[in-house]
Length: 262
Image (tube, rainbow, N blue to C red; front, side, top):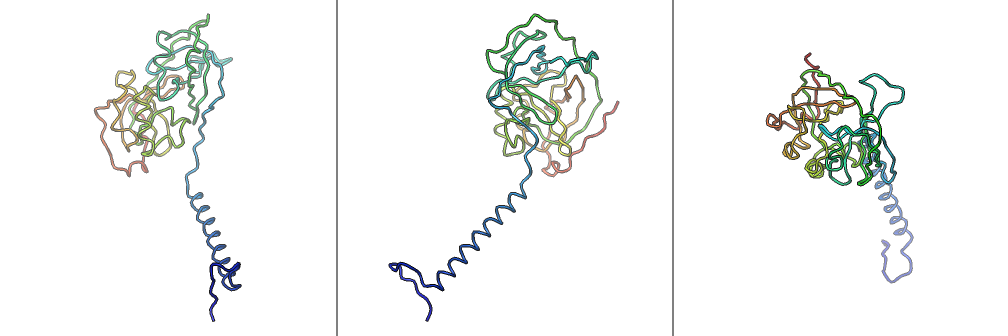
């Protein structure tokens, strides 16, 4: 006769209890195995950081164009190309730092903020009201060097989230957030699909792009061509937004960086 469990009895029959324990144990082990497989299949988080809550003090010279940057002198360096470290500046939230540094271009300042960094590129989220003038010499203009015309495949992202504030800070899952950041004045950067090189996007005149000029191409697979410039730590890619065209999703897996034509 098969075991039959009656709900009001204090215990289930022995055979039915053993079977139930085996089923529960098997389901638990299978759940753990599935979770481990899913975790193993996830891409690792990039080596980025946002030092939230850790406010530091910085001293340097404001460079306002094409995007707000703090030039911090490197001790012992006298060569014009290596004399300064470049720190991109942004405001809290989804905003660039244009308003914070208005009228301060070329001025020596002291400010407080939180560091954001990834792959050798560093940014400061400036604490509003913390910028004060210093009595110090202004920085000499950084030399700008053309590296020629390049063709590169990848995607447009907002620099603040990509460098460390959000994880992931790229891809279609981040498109809406990136769109709001760029509309708020956060500098746009182009990330190459194959080796994740970073290029700050500027207009063909070398100036900052309009805040909504790239809206329809954010987080989309693109192949763009433009003249690449190097200034200090910055790599500036001059592009014409009107020349951008939507491409196949397959380009995100086959990005290429053409050698500059000198």
